[in-house]
Length: 528
Image 1 (cartoon, rainbow, N blue to C red):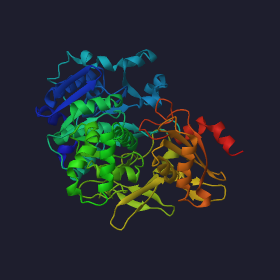
Image 2: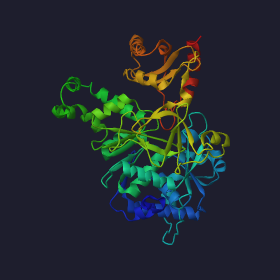
Image 3: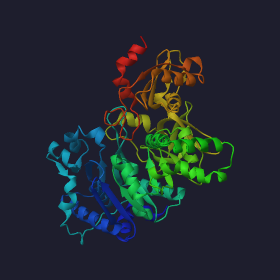
Image 4: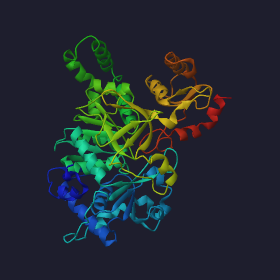
């Protein structure tokens, strides 16, 4: 493997690079720094951490929104051989007082709003001011070994308190190798990093921008549309729900004027009978507004973390904005990745040579690798034994298969399979995807486990949609299903499923258990 992709090389890569840069957007705050200037900030914070007593292997906690300070602190911690522990706000904001003791933190930094929660918390927003006068000229950085832990990451927590996993530094090097092998990246590329930095992939793209040499845009999710237009990035990663949102926004834009409606309908009629070479001008007119949403220069879109509907992928393919679906889990890391060299729609790409895949008798995906991110969960022996098996394989909890050409397909979560009271089984994702394809329904959760029939909870695109229109759409869907799997009843949700109301997790996956609990009384009425 390429030693230039090791965490040990991050500081040198920053110090020597006065071409590539980071752009930071936060409300009215904007600045741009070349990596060599960023290096100075990292070194000052490293010196400050040493002054505060942080040594190799010590854990440093972080909680807060994306910020330049957050990024610099994380870089300073990991390049000094210490362990960065970024806590997802949604899962831990109510537990601030206990985190230092529970995770044996040497220091704990947080946004100002959390400072009063504990005397041990240091204000993250003052970090650069606190470190400004630090002299790093004689600072000796600790060497980082391949087996050293550099961070603790957390599972998404849809079934309770997130579980912590220690990750070794050599896993970063392997991740970088796969990124570079998969995509033709250049120094002129620019990635927008808006997912919370507590998510490992968001931080990995920070390290990649430094080690691989491309530009970085750092912002927060609530600023995404504005910053896309201003920064014009070329690379973006996002969860499927984000790409669904862009699709819905685009579709509403096509209906804004008679001319847009006419062009959109004309294109879809002609596309069925004429070669694409004859439709270039019309294609450009129709999809211009979509490309504008992404900032005009986008060339690589990557998604993962949850299932992506195949029809959505086909839509982006038609728009010449291919979305590359990838697969990975916190316990193992990145497993497979669609890319320009090997792409099959509906699959999550071919597994990497560093990952061995086995499909169990019940179709669960099992993975073995020398580069697995975790070897167990922190302080959770019971769950560790269930997931990290004695034979070296990690039980993913995902259903799937590998086709004859070696492409991996993920078919859903094993624990989410609906088993009707008569024993028939169906994965809810099949039903939910069909519901969302009606363009009337934004979000859906299918119900039916140990029940006599299938029902669903739906979030409407337009709250004023007549009930009979929804019924007609569901009746059309039911024509595809056998009697046992027809949707017999539905509940219209009071409001969308969001992170704020606890019905989605921090990676924008629907939290099924929370939805079931929130609509428990409504569900009970359906089956009585």
